[in-house]
Image (cartoon, rainbow, N blue to C red; front, side):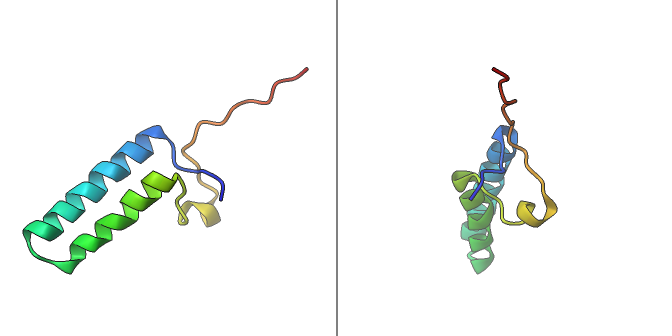
Length: 66
């Protein structure tokens, strides 16, 4: 799959995922597993929800003209 999660987006997803997991552990709730979704999308660099919308937060390199 094509990478579509950029730097700032990736950091935000990691922080949010860890917070959700920590809250789930703190409150002893299975809802903490929801935190795995942003964490995994950050680590893989691909967000399936961005694909149909055509969104990408990655910086793209301009093709070089030779």
